Length: 102
Image 1 (cartoon, rainbow, N blue to C red):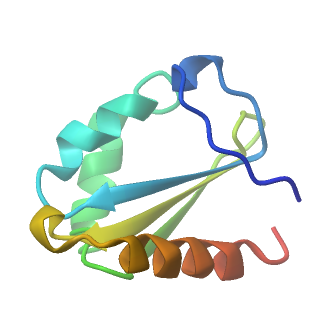
Image 2: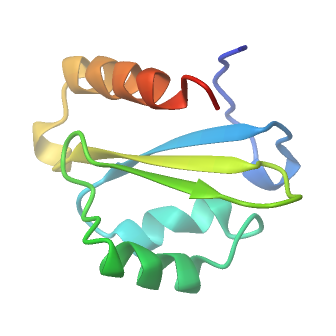
Image 3: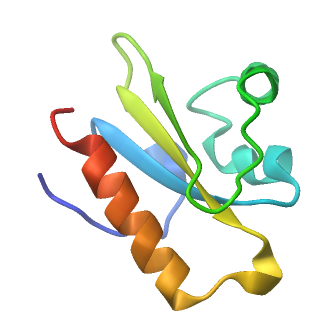
């Protein structure tokens, strides 16, 4: 598995698995970065049904058949004002463990 940081437009990104850290406030707005990859309105409704609010440590796995990426993991980062580098480390570790076997 190759892990990399991508700083460009996600519509140009290619890979089998994408991990996104999401802050607790304005989840729908943050999902706009993957707008070309999936329907964010449908995704927002799905996340509401799953009670995903992006609390620290929350994780949701999405699978797509025959698309790139095949899987997207959304990792809750908690409230923006409480976000520390340790939260990012813990979230990265959580995402790595969740990806085992993917």
